[in-house]
Length: 244
Figure (tube, rainbow, N blue to C red):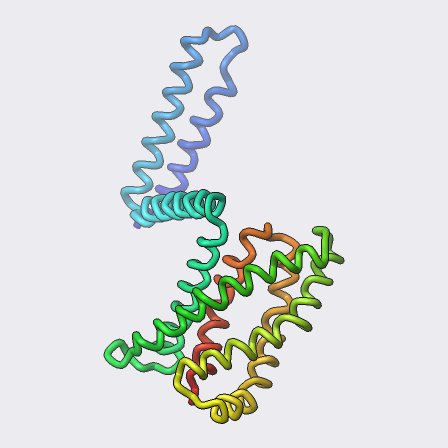
């Protein structure tokens, strides 16, 4: 790892190179300006190169950030072309991630005892229920409450949490119970046992998230942002839904 002295020396070399062009006289020719800029670029490159030799994490971080940037741009391009499909795939995939986290970190099943069938069930709920229903609801909500002000965001959150969230949560748990083979009586009993706790937990997390979501995030990205935040929530829901 580079010593503090070497890092300071590198910083000084970069700062010196940046000051070089500023000190050029006004009558300097285009050729000398170009040469100066090229020299400055060479000094910066050499300085960063010497730093990255001692700090391999520097290169790794830069490559990781570039990779994330490319992935985000690709996601935005796909979202522009096929917003509905991308939102549904995103929702289903992240519900699946939530179930994996639930099985491995909450229930501590271990890889050998991981239920791929259960993960597939939860992903199917994400693809065919969560994605279409939540994505469609955001479109309806944008028509019910218009505007992008803080007041509008607050109204959207209240409508979402008072009208939509209780119905969505009840349906989600009911579908999960059905896919787990519960009879109607068993499903009703499970809802009576788990629904209130799940709804209270929902109100601990989602009001603040949804105010930020409605105020800062464009409509076509809201489902994706919610589902990213919801990885933790999906883990809880998966555990709750499969707790027989």
